[in-house]
Amino acid sequence: MSTLNEALSKQHRLSIWHIYHKGDEHITITPFINPKKEFGLNKKSHKKLAAEYPQPPDRNNESNSYFVHHPTLLFHNVPCTLRRGNKKTGTPVCLIKCGAFWLNWKIQFGDNLKDVIDPRGVVKWECRSNPNNTTLNDDRALKGYKVRTWRVWGESGKSYHRQVNARRKEKKNTKVTDADPFEMEKVTEDEKQDLGDSQTQDPSPPSYSASPQVAIPQPAVAEEAVRLNWSSPLSLNTRRYSFEYGGIKFYWKGTRDVHPDKQWAKWLMPFSHLKLIARLPGIGSENILVGQYTPSFACRKFGELWIFDSVVARLLGEDDSATLTEQGAVSAPRDIRKTRLYEAIMATAMCMIIGEAQKREILIALLAIAAEGGSAN
Image 1: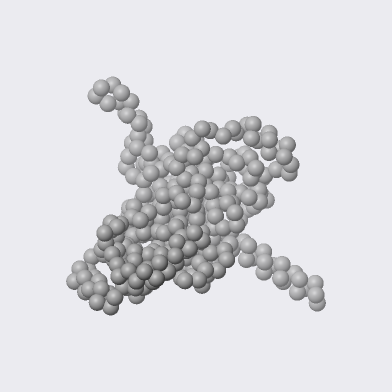
Image 2: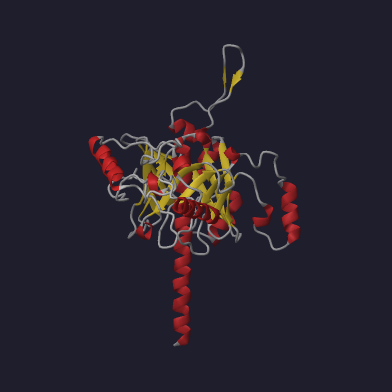
C-alpha cells in the first residue's frame, strides 16, 4: 500500500488538516476550513465557501488543532514550538530546530516542556541542560536563553520581559537577599560549583522541578528526541528526508500521486507535493503510505495534510475498531492523535512544509536577481 488510490480504496480512517499562515511567522493546523484564507478572488466566493463549511461548536477545543509558534529573539536562531490548540499559548508538544541549510531538523518532545518554556516561547535560562549551555552530541539537551536587560522592537515576550526586569529592579532597590527565580545569572559561585558537582556525580540527566520553594531550578532535558535528516541533498531525489521512531523507518519524499480531485495541483505545482512512507523492520517489508501533503494556491494557506489514522494505529500495534465491554457498552479506541508517534509525524510534516517553502522562496529570489542582472546587461 504505497499509493494514494490503494490507501483510499481500503477505506482507512483519515484526518485532513488545513495548514494556514498566522501572521508572518506562525502557522495554524486545523481540521476546519477557514473560508477567508481559501483560494478565491472576491468576498462572494468566500461567503459561498463559508456556507458550505460552517464553523463547528468545538472549534476552540485544544485537541482539535495545532499551532506552530516561531519566537523572535535577536542574534539567536531559536527553535519553533509545536503546540496544541489554535493559540501560541497552547500546551507545548515539542521544540523544532532547523540545522544549517536544512540538512537536519532536531525535534525534542517532553511533558515537562510546559514548565520549561517561558512566555517568550523559548527555554528558560535556568532550565538549560548543561552549565555551558551546549547541546553538542546530545539531542535531548535543551538550550536556554537569558532575559536581557534590553529588548528590541518585535522580539517575543514583551510583557514577560518587562515583568522580569521590573522584578530585577525591585530586588536591587530593596536589597533582598533571596534568590530571584527569574535570574540564573545571580547564582553565587558556590551554588554553581555545587550544581556542577551534583551533575558530575549523577550521570543521568536531572529533571526540572517547578516547585516555587526551589531557589535554583534543576536543569531539564527532553524526554525524547527525533532527528529528521536530508537523505541525498546532491542527487536526483533531493526532496527526501528520513527519520526513525520505535524501530520503524519513515521517509518524507516528493510525489506526483495526488487525489483525482486535485489533478490541477499535479500539473501546476509538480514539485511541491509530499508523501510519508513507513517501512517496517525486516527484509522485503513493504512500503506503507502514512500521510500525504498537497499544497494550495491560496496566498494565506500552505496546503492540506492527510494522515491515515488507522495506519498509524496499525504501526503502533493497536486495534483501531471499537470493542464491546463485558457490560455490553461500546468502548471507543484510543485517540491516536494524542500518541507520541502521531505528534512526531505532525512535527516532521511541519519541518518538511516549512523547509520546502523556504527553499522555494530563496530559489525564486535568486531567479529574480538573475533576471534583473540579465535585463540590465
